[in-house]
Length: 473
Ligand code: IFM
Image: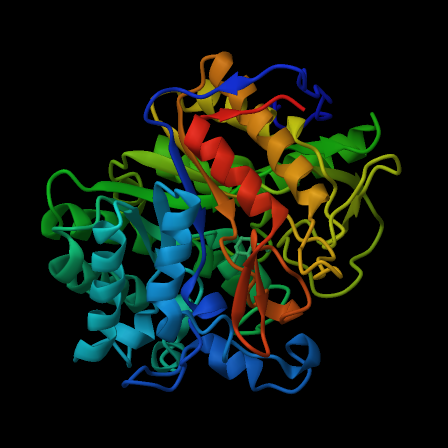
């Protein structure tokens, strides 16, 4: 059984110690194109599946959409100033595919590429490392109309797009990620139907997951060919330790299935060159996996330099008796997710469990010892508000970040090669199906005026980055 399927042990760090990070540790913060840019119909950008999904009545809370989000498309220079004031070493952002190639194939949109070139140059001028993600869920709608990620062809189109972006920016961007969180794109989008493109088809979701992974492998090869030889290539996965709610065989079996679909289904082909047998067996009643063609797993395992780890919470699962509706877990639809009663939760209802991050990093290191890790997302939504003194005193977020950084530190101390940490998120932004109702930023965004305001967590994080250390508290 995977050591990830067990209870996450609570090991709160000694808060009286200053935690020093290795020299050169990469401190950053992230955003994603559709969540912050706005300007969805400007300068030749084509529609993406998220524009189409947001237009569907009832799909997104309050009918919100990615317009205007944080208006980053127009305010990027101001935002780079904010980053410089924070002392950010790196900024993780994503490129909107339909902004640079409106139909997802064929002609490029020079104005779209110019935007990212301006952003990259502004970052470099301020000494901030651009960390570019090629795909954070916003497939060009034109490709969706030709089968989307269910079509194998889309993976080839993605490699062309990767090549085009690398031809323009490959001399200046040192850190690349191909795909962000393929689990979400595949299963929330094609099995549960709660993310774009809003489909409920479990068999399709598995094919989609494979095509996203194939797209990653092809894009990794395209980046090697087109970008500077010093460019580092990665992919970001949302991963979690999965524990059984009780010691019953049924709950342990549920944990194995969820661990397979969430973690090993992505890490195994990437780092071991093969999909896990148990995941294929668990889903064999819905697909024969013939979408995996000879050579595909080899392509997916194309060498990468870093694995991006997006961690928010561990999962505790129990077997149930029937599916409760569309599920993002093909072949494990009856599994129930529990939040242990004593655990505090974020505004998303996600349990706060920093020890889960240490556990996850250690598991990755044990199972795939040669790949350096980067925490490419970690953070939390809380009910932030501007108080009477004009401040956002998000002490819960400060504690969340402190404890999760301590968890990263514990993993490093245990010998895990973790190269950096990116807070999610630099700015409050569009939280997908939850619209603007959840704030993950360390910078508050007033969506009426677009005014930015550092929260207490931003000032705390600035001091951490400056000291390369987490202070005692
Ligand atoms: O906002 C998202 C991000 O786009 C992907 N990872 C999780 C974040 C919080 O839900």
